[in-house]
Image (cartoon, one colour):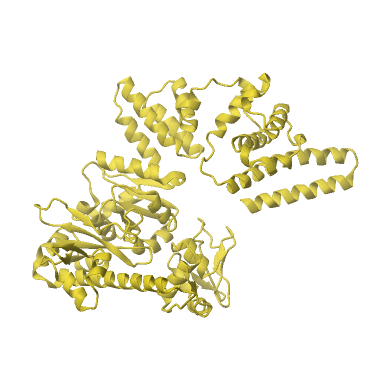
Length: 583
C-alpha cells in the first residue's frame, strides 16, 4: 500500500482543528484559556475532559485517561480503521490534497477510480435531489412526501430525490460530464441492457446512503407504482456498497448520538425523517430487516447505547431477536423503544400529536433483552411444550449475555412469566450459562458449589483458564508456585495441570473440582487469539498471587524480618500496578 508523503502528513496535522472535531461530539467551553467539556469516552456529570493548551493538538480526560491527537480521535470516534484512513479523513475534512510515495501505477489508477466514483455518486445525489423539486413528473413523489408529513426543508436536509422515468437521463448526464458507461455501472447507477447502459434507478424516490464521513456510497429507492413487484431496490452489492455495513443517515446522526450517548435504529428511511421532525436527530435506518454485527460495531463508535425501534408485529420481533444475536458481546448495550401493534414512526409523523408521541416513546426505553424475554414468554401460551420451547429460546438468548446482575434478572423474569418450578429455574440458569450439555451433566458435590470467598474465587479463576487453555499456559504456569494456592484442592489441581495430566486421570477426591473447572471453562470465549489468552492467564495469575503475598508479608512481620516484609510489599505493589495497567 502506498505511503502518504511526510510533507502531506505534516500539512494535515498542522491544519486539523481538534476543537472543531471534538465539538461535533461534545460541548466545549473555554475556561482560563483551556477548552473543557464532558468526556465523550465515558459518562460523567462534571467535565474532566479537555484540550491541552496552547496548541490544542492533544486531548486528555482526567476521569478515564483517554488521550490522543486528531489521528487518535478519527480512529476512535470517526470510524477510521487505520492510520492512513484517519489521515485521509482529516485531509478531506480540512481541504488538504494528499501526495503519496512509493505508489505503483495500478494503485494510482485505483485511487483515481475511487475518487471519480465518489464524485459521480455525489453528482447523482445532487441531480436526484434537484429533479424532485423541478420536474413535473416528480409531482406524485412530492405529494407522497408531503402526505407523510415531511416539508421541503426536511426532505432537502436528508438529500431525498427522484430518479427520472425516461430510463437514460442519468446515463446521458454522466456522459456529458465526462464519465464513461463503465464508470456508471461500477458506481451502481447504470446497468447494461440491449447493448447499451441504462439508468439503474428509474421512476423512484431516492434516498442517498452515505458512510460515516458523509460520502455517498449508493442509494435506496422506493417506487410509487403499486404494479411494481419490488417496492424498494438498493444499489447493487459490491466492494464499496455493502448493506451489512451501511446505515441510512449515519453521518447526520453521529454528532447528536455522541452527545446523547445513544443512537436509535429504525426499519425504514421515512422513520428516520419522522424522528427528525420530532426533534430527535440521533436516528439511523438499517439497510436490511435487522442489525448486523458490522453495523453494531459501527454504531458503538458513536454512542454507548443502541436503541431499536422496530414494528411490534412478528416480523419486527424476529428482527429484534436477530439484532440481539448479532450484537454479540455488546448485547447489553441494546435497548428498545416500545411501539403498540400497528404503530409506525413514519405514520405517526402525520398525526397532530405525532412528534410528541415519538418523544415519549424515545424517553421510555427499556433493555432489549428484557423486552424480548417478556414478548417471547407471553406468547408461549399454556401448554407445557410451548413453554419449554420458549424457555429453550430464552436460554439461547441469555447465553449471549455476560454473567451479570442483568443476566440473573433475565432468568428470574423468564421463570416468573413461564411459571417455572425452582428446579426448572435452576436448569434455565445453568443452560443460559453453559448450554444444554453442561447443564445436564452430573452435579458436583456441595463443597464445589459452596459460596466462595474472594481469594478462593481468584484461585478458581486462574485454574479455570489454565485448564481450558492448557496449550497456551505452559510459560505462565512455570512462573507460579504451588504455595500461591491456599486451598489444598486447588494446589493439587494446579500441580496436575502444570504436569499435563488430563482431568479424567485426576485422583477421585478431585473429580468434582475437575468437573466444576471444565463447566466454568466452557463459558470462556472460544475465539480469543493465543496472545489474548496468555495475557488473560497472566492477569489471573497475578490476581491469585496477591493474597499469598499478603499472607507472606504478615508472616515475615510476625517473625521480625522487616527487610523480607518490605521486599514482599514492593512485589505486591508491582503486581497491583501491572493489574491497573491491564485494566
